[in-house]
Image 1 (tube, rainbow, N blue to C red):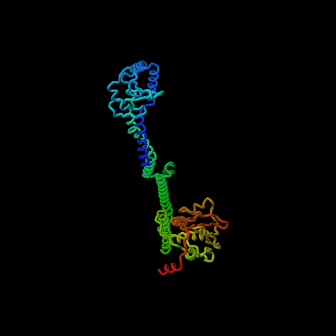
Image 2 (cartoon, rainbow, N blue to C red):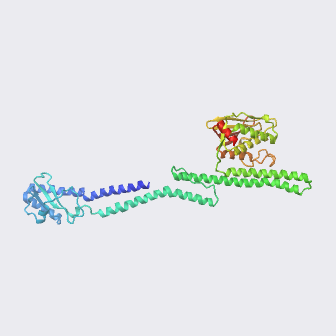
Image 3 (cartoon, rainbow, N blue to C red):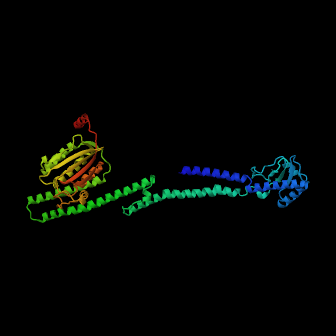
Length: 448
């Protein structure tokens, strides 16, 4: 834009300057018309009265322009009137300008012009010194000031005003938003005029809004975690205080202390895990994971811990189902989802994992035969410390499992959402498809 403006200013100054210079170097249309009228009148006076007519016209012209000598000459450059040519006229007869010629402003004297008779140019001409009022270029200095000073200055002022409106105002808005963050209103957003632009400033504005939204979400989550964690810790701490003040025997007191401490430890670990997943933004290097093998490992651990019959844990995911992700976080997410399904399914229920390839992604879904959840709670179940069954903290979990699972999948470019079915609740997982590794690669990894 700056280069284009500079080139425009150069070309505009050159073109306008050239135009004005040409206009100042030539006689005006009015002056040329007036001089041609003099030639026509002189010719008519000479045709009507001969030498006497020429003298009368020259006398009348001298009254109008006393400072502009004039004469009428024939084709032989001899005077047509009774007055002989003066020495100055003789000297200028060798070079006479036409009425359309440019006039130099640097000449010390007024130029001499020759205007042929319009009716019969071969008979004679009017020779005169240009009257001073007709000299062009009287306002040349003013035009130079306008062209070289006023006009570029005005255009530069308009250009700078446009640049300010285009560049500085959005930067001021960004500065105001950054200053607003210091006052802690993280909900402040830029105006649509700054974020809908199609240039780099628009991208910067959208990045600022995304950053502000990210900061607001992180701070809100931290506040919520601190608030909920302090609330969840009050109950086990109160029970520990009651147990310490009671008259329980040593073994029963020890069992109570171990149970409460284990619950608080699990609560703190899950809370820290959720906070870490939300704050961690440097993804690990993804690796291909076979879902079927991962399910077998997770299902075995879940059956051992919950004593759930392995026969009622089904998996129809094909062996060629390989996904990209981090093994540890994906295993933890799948384990949390499975434990949640076991916790809310009847003892005779069945839980199944199924999958389907959709383009470059695998869609997995885990079905249980529980009671499902209300439609308005399908998103709330992924919020931290949400327990829709009203269970006591620690007995039915702390409401962190599904929240950890969703954050873990989102960190790997996946997604997790819930929906109700005729038999219970379905949790859907979307993960990136991975190319199935060759047997040689698998053997090499196993040896390592």
